Length: 282
Image 1 (spheres, helix red, strand yellow):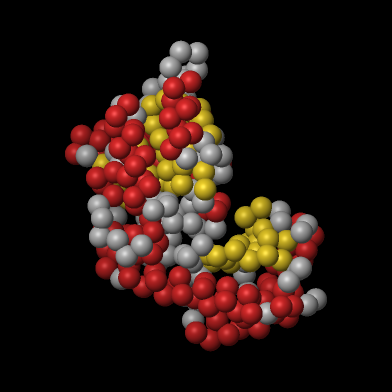
Image 2: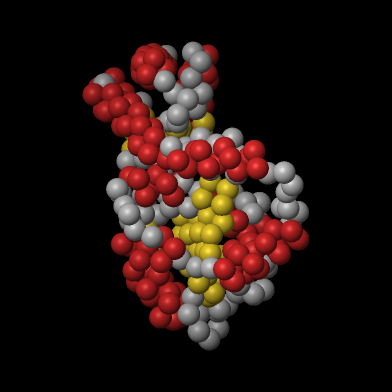
């Protein structure tokens, strides 16, 4: 809802939003942008979620006459489809600087933004490089529910109106807010999840038996992607892990995603290593 409210405020019907072809806001929100704000997306080249600035400039120039007007750039950090990649603050700042030159809004879909902030060891202010920003209390921070939308005072005043229109008004949310507040206090713990993922990734890299079965990718946060040659192997691997009490999922038909979080204990880590090894030999 935070993403969609931002698009409603930043755009007018028939305009375009620049994003990546595999972004969450484009692919995993049930076409809400076309239904609610009546905009369409313009895909831009990227490397691990970092939009190519030259491509943005080129697309903007070409949109001046015969193509829809570009009103917003939507950036995702961390970038899920690239394995939870961190898009650097400096790169986001460069895109923001160009966007302000040409009068385009910047929205950051920061569902997992704290992974990026802590992963970079950053004390920088993302509010300085965005017009709107979302993040989730439930993704790695550990709260059971909740997301936050941030922006200027004027932006939030309008956002509250849209939230009400979309059915997002809630009562008696103090309990939810208290858990979100505590989760944010303990945010440094996210780095433990990064280390868990790295430990499993290092384990996989050390085992030559995995060579040819899948290729592992790790992008310095709490996810590992295992890329298989075909969908049957990836599904069998998931099924074998599940039989051993290890749950994983598909990011696409040939790619298994492992996500590490606060409820994965030290003993669990030993179990996961054993079962990844045994499941790959079946």
